[in-house]
Length: 388
Image: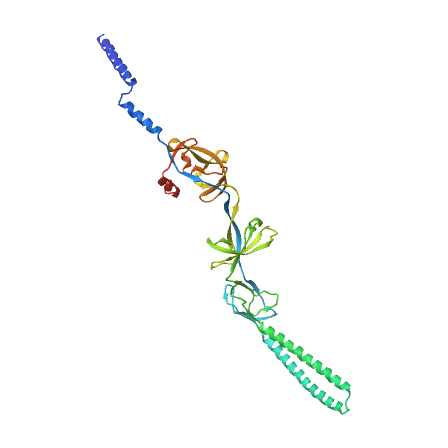
């Protein structure tokens, strides 16, 4: 029984201690703690994020760059062939060789032509002998006719014979000229400095006039040929310079001519451009011609980092409006992106006045949020991309 009284007394004391501890926990904070919490809440209410604010101005047009694929063409490209049939005696060059203007490429065997020329020369000597005999006979007949011992018919016959002999001599002289022309053209020379792109003739071959011997491509004065739409061609002019990309190199090309005929398949106009730089080009090599085209449409240029996702696949920009105490309120505006470059976008959908927008870090803000303008030092770091 003594144990039960001690147990009951223990539980009573423990209950009183627990009750007083509970009252102490639920009592008001001390006067020292209250000012500290009030000051922290006040500082939290006065904190505002800083934002990179940029001013954008309207533009009446924007330029876009279009790339058109053309090819490099040589200004001089020819197929060489002999004018007359013959047997090839010697070939001096092969495919890929560089040749200079007037260099001998191949030649015919001219032995038969030389023999024919000698035969014609002998025939001419024969006719000249007959012409001399005709002259002597005509002289004798004229002397006899003055004395009345010869008729006029004999004189006429000798005069006709003289005319025939002179005609035969002229014909044989023409044959000699033809033989000499063939001999002189039995050697094939390069018409200009070029490279032999292909050779289709061999020594000992019996060559015909309609057969191709060499294909030559001039090494200098290359051009670029490209087809562009009619609308683009109408905005260009002869002498204008364009950017040309060849083998990842950016070159400068000048428009030589703008065609007047529309291609029946591609429906484009051909442009011919000369390349000012001296470099190694190959005939038929692909070239990219970059042409800037102006689009007349009012809008704004702004950084790509100023765009954020909107609803239903649309784009938004965060505009800011001034509030008291040099603070700014954010509002989202839906815009339409017309054209983009690597770091900027041309948009429409804003009134054609100047606007202030958040240029970077738009993922950190929401509409109706109050922000402050970032300092110049912070704006410069953000714009150069040194920090995220």
